[in-house]
Image (tube, rainbow, N blue to C red):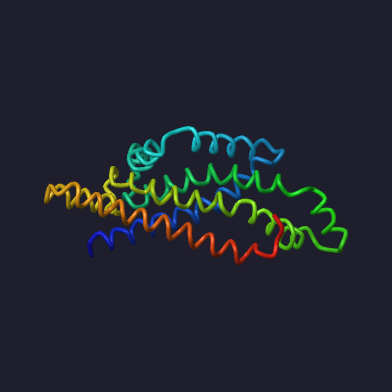
Length: 209
């Protein structure tokens, strides 16, 4: 259990880093897709389409073995984080786009009419409403990243699934080890969902549905 616990921390680390990168890139992709300039619009669209319509396993393999064709060799950790961030960015770009679309244009005009700058209008009026709209989809995406990080063992990453398979290959106690890993994944996912729900309630309790 101590080894599985440390591996679970690796899973959380990979998931958190991937999610942060994915959120940042997803927001950038959202704005790029809404741009009228083709130099921004089309690369962002291709990114989103590829990320959302190809298996995550293929993306992990691509970033782990693909750069080797050009003499660039990524560690399993970097490759898995890159692949999960790439995939998350594609999904979050569409989530952010839906969130911004849910905010009426009159909100921005009203804020500007009160003397706010464009940046102030976005930070104080638009973004809080977008955050409320995307909070729970974003939480679901984070849980999804945690579970998909298990595919990293196929690229040699010793996260929770990789560590479980390692001990299984040494002891042949398949049921015990994978049952324990499944319980840990379940507890992590429930903890994330509960924490996000508590934070969301505190952030948005004063807002009407």
